[in-house]
Length: 358
Image (tube, one colour):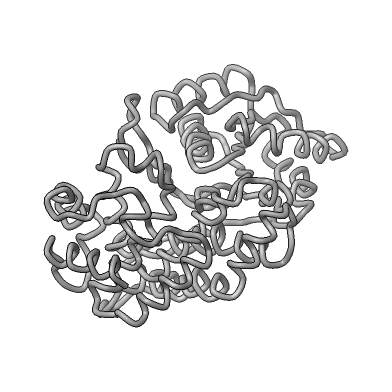
C-alpha cells in the first residue's frame, strides 16, 4: 500500500506574523486576504505592520469578507476574483468558516494557502478539509484536499484578545479528539500513520488537563501566557495533526455523533458552541462504554472549565420522545460507522440519563 502524509507547518508566538515574509515570499509577493469582519479587525493591522518591513515586500492586493457560511458558491466567486486581481497566494484569517472558505478558494484557484487563526475554537488552520454548507445554511459536505495549508501563523496575542468562550469550545472539541480516536481505533491493526496519529491524540488530552483552567484565566485577562499557548497548541496543532494522520474513520465517534443529533433541536445550535457540545458527547460516550468513574472525573473537570455538562443546562429536553430524532441521528450518523461495537438508541438515551444524574 502506497500513501502520502503531509504535515502542517506552523509558527506560534506573540510575534508569529514576523515570519510571514520569510515563509511566504518564495511563493510570490501578492496575497488576497480573506477573513471574517471581527477577525480582520483583530489581526489585519498587525499582519500589515509585520509585512511592511519585509524584503521582498509582500502586498495585500485586496481584503474581502468570506461571507456568512463556507459554501462552494463563495469559493468559486473568490477564486475567480483572486485570479482577476493577480493574487499569487491566499491568506485566510479568522475562525473555522473563514479559514475553510479561504482553503477552498485557494484549491479552486490553484494557489497556495496560508492561515492566520484568530480564535482557537477549531483546528481548521491546520487540517486538509473544509466543512461546506449550502446557501440555506444546512450542511452540504466535507471538501477534502491533498495537503493542509502551506503554513499557519498562530499569533497568541491575537487569540488572547478573543472571547474566552471560543478557547473553551476549542478545548472541548480537542478533548473529544483524544477520547474518540482511541475508542474508534480500539482493536484495529493500524497503519503507521494512524497509529502515530492516535498517539499524538494523547497531546489533545494531557496538556489540557494541566493547562486548560489557567489558559482560560489568561484569555479572560487577555494575556498570552504559557498556559494559553499550550492550550492553543492542543486545539489547533495537535488536533490538526491527528486529523491529518489517521484514517477518517478514526477522527470521530459517539461524541461528535451526539452533537450532530442535538443540533436537530430547534434553536440548539444557536445557543451552544460546537466544542462545548462535543465535550458533553464525551460524557455520553464514556457512559455508553461503561466508564462511569471516568465520566464522573471528566464531568467535574468540564464544570471547572465552565462547559455545560447536562441536557438541561444546554436547554435541551430530557424526555425520550422529545429526543427521538436526536437519538436516531446519533446512531445512524457517519461517525458511528467504525466503532468497536453496535450502539443503539436505547444505549445512547440510557447514557444521557446517567450523565444527567451523575
